Length: 123
Length: 148
Image (cartoon, each protein chain N blue to C red):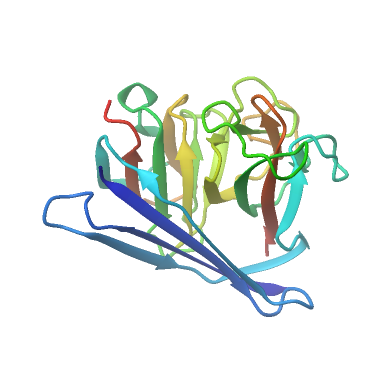
């Protein structure tokens, strides 16, 4: 059985009187498909992960742009509910129940989104 | 203002044949109030915005959000949550059908920049963030920081 080990740390020394130094990890089963790709965003929403093609998965996304204005919105569909707002260089990691499609939309330009999807079950 | 440094690693030795996975990514984020330190709540607690609402509706800023299902029930903070039934749904602050953002099962965590609201209720924006237990109320850890 293949396993994926995600570890997230959050650190800050100037936020509060206390130092933020969080570290969490998990051990996730990945028995199904693994998708690793880069997708070019445009100002028209395009589905990059259709819910019908996956079961529950763990998703990593990163906006590879270095241009501040090239924000990528992750939404349910073109002009649908907007979920995430990835600025240049920003990333996200979350479990996706694959109940809705994942689409991307650029505020401007053609930023590239790095996509990694790890499906929990074999099918 | 303050600096938040998130780092994520994804590692596996057996996910591909002959190719280990060892991804590491980090970022330097400038954040400002309103924000939290790492906090804990039950999924039905009211932290000032309504039961289960972490970020209220109509917030027109982007928030970096961390949330983790602690895998224990809210009833006593000790009993293990059911692995299959006691998941948590994240939705907009109104908990509207179709606004479901993601589900966290016991032990799972997420980190993401939440899309800002457009200032109108019922628009395409998610509009805040609410946690709802699927079955028994559970405890979560969370944090949010406004993008500056």
